[in-house]
Image 1: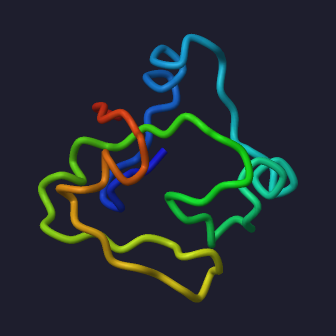
Image 2 (image 1 turned 90 degrees about the vertical axis):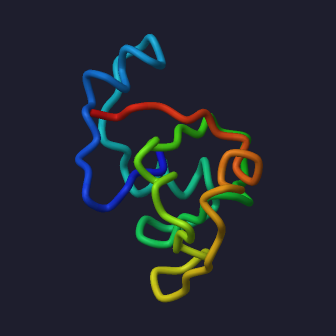
Length: 94
C-alpha cells in the first residue's frame, strides 16, 4: 500500500478490496516478501511479486518521495508515473 502521509489507511476498506482479512505485517514477513526492512521498503524491486495499491490522494502531488531500500535513503518519482512504475492499482483508502 502506497499511501499519502496525511492519510490513515482504513484497514476495513483495504480488506474489502483484497477480499480477505488483513493485519499488520511483522518485520520478518516484510523482509521475506520484499527483501527490505521496515522503514526502507521501496515501491519497486521486491523479492516477490506483490499486489500494490496506490492511494488516489498521491496523484495530487507533482513529485513523490519514497523509500529507496534503506531507512536512510529515498528517491523521487513523478505521480504521473507511479501506477506504471509500480504496477499498482489506484484506490481510495478512506
